[in-house]
Image (tube, rainbow, N blue to C red; front, side):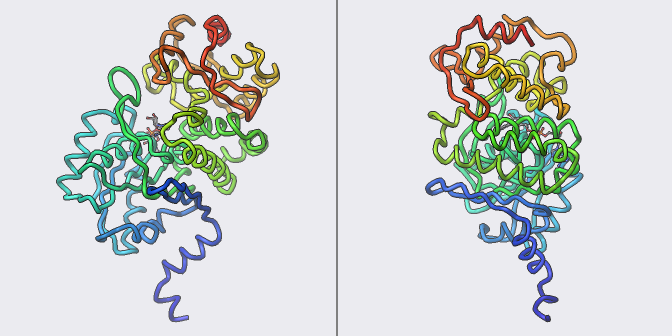
Length: 385
Ligand code: NAD
């Protein structure tokens, strides 16, 4: 029909949306937002973002790797809806989550004359999402931003829930703000350019959701994990949807981590200590630390008689199948001894009144917050590797 030839992009998006886009809603009062998950969302970005704009321009911040691969796709999607975009490209890597690049972002956004009513877009992994979200939180006391997460970790975890920030010399994520995005677009196709190691690191966080609160999901992953890692996009979309739905539900009930949200830190107390011991770099990626940390949290739970002996074995067997890290021996180089690792855990910001708070489990899918855990048991878990 003539109408269809007049508006091919919109018709395509409408069909695409009906067919493959799933939406998770985060119903936080006064700052509710949608998370769209689907193939080819960069192409539809303009149509999805346009309703949020007061004028047809946005500022995009990305990193060099993601920018080279996906910035032109995003620009094309935006321009289909008549939206122009200026872009700032930063170096990739965790070091970008620091004061220098934060200042660079804020200065650039001011130079771009971004006003309170404008929108900033974070296009990238968790580093860009955390940094740009924080820049948006402090620019003019807060401007709105859209997360376009491009790593698996960012799609299932960091882009949802509004934790933004940078690292300090004293530790990771110690400077930041809660600032919810106005929209999240998780394009499953962009995961296709992620290297296998980064994809698997993100999978560590996917598995975490099953382990902390949904045994059926963990079982689904045991069946579908390998095909999903090999590239099956509909399985990837389903894994992202289930993870995001769980995170959205938890964040809606406990936005500022007074209680239940702490469950999302399953595997993170061990993981952060290992990241600190390895210098937050290429030796151990965040998601790899989380994978080992989850295995250790179940090992510790079994040692304390809280869950069945088979549970830690099942976690490690799945990590093994996936080719993910499952213990300290997977980390190259020498590590500090168990006592030093225990001290590093004490630096974690999950320490309350000097007491280490651990996320332990009564079984797969049954995590809980434990406040006093005997040090001897922790040391045994660390020594066992
Ligand atoms: P990252 O942003 O460094 O991305 C990992 C690497 O993948 C980078 O080199 C990046 O350039 C590259 N990359 C990203 N998308 C790509 C794509 N589609 N194709 C090719 N390469 C791509 O790291 P990450 O693992 O995404 O996120 C880790 C960060 O997230 C950490 O700083 C962590 O603290 C933070 N985090 C935050 C939250 C939160 O709630 N805010 C939750 C979990 C983790």
